[in-house]
Image 1 (tube, one colour):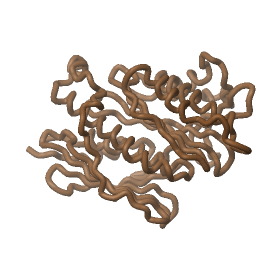
Image 2 (cartoon, chains in turn purple, orange):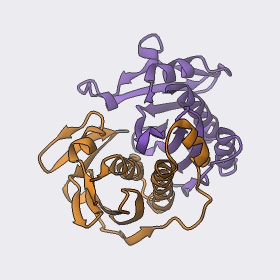
Image 3 (tube, chains in turn brown, yellow):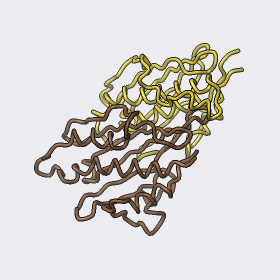
Image 4 (cartoon, one colour):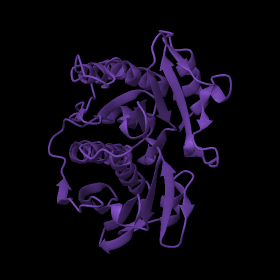
Length: 173
Length: 172
């Protein structure tokens, strides 16, 4: 098993809702080096924005490790809601795939500056992606106040869902 | 028979890492981490230190103790977690698997069908359970520390480390 970053990128570029624009999507499906002077693998990120809105997000190159005896794979990622320098929101997501490449586990933690952090439960049954989405959605406020990036934060559940769906495409048997 | 640990295997499982004699370092998700070579603390018990590298005194430190049974199946994990700067510490906490709710790879039978014996399938299930439980238990505390996300992602690094330890032990 392996994580195919191109397959992830393709999925992000062609998401069925067609409601995000991947920045620089013409090259490497949008993966680029975050720092110009660092060409290491995990310096690669993908940035995208919600169409019809000025809300920007960043996905870092996912980390994966095989479960012993090649029984499956853990895949983790950090996603940023880009608000500016020290005030970005962070989502850290851990997922598990079985030996057939099927998602069987997911859990997300969410950090927002000046707001209480929150997280989903350990999700292992039902529609895992929808459940992670819904549990994040339940914690998103209606209004984060002046300069609170309310509209961008309201899209976080959807952004996590898009990422999880694309991660499923990225996991190859 | 006893459980042996293969350091070369372990180090090879960190993609894009720089290996030094006493540790490895790798950058992932916008942060830098250091994983020291695991040492054998007692029979079937491995001890490993990890740093989230920020700058000197502000580094976060984790110490993991992982115990295996004589079949090299993970049995127990305990950890200490020390935050940089103010030294806030989550101390001497054990991760316990107390119920069956995390039987996620779950259909152990399905793993047997895949070609794993019942014993190896259980071994994989337990490895996974500890990784997921560690992520849940530790993140719940660490999520309150808001830097660039690197302190929080450190928990995922620890989960991957538990997972990679499980893939680096064998019975001889």
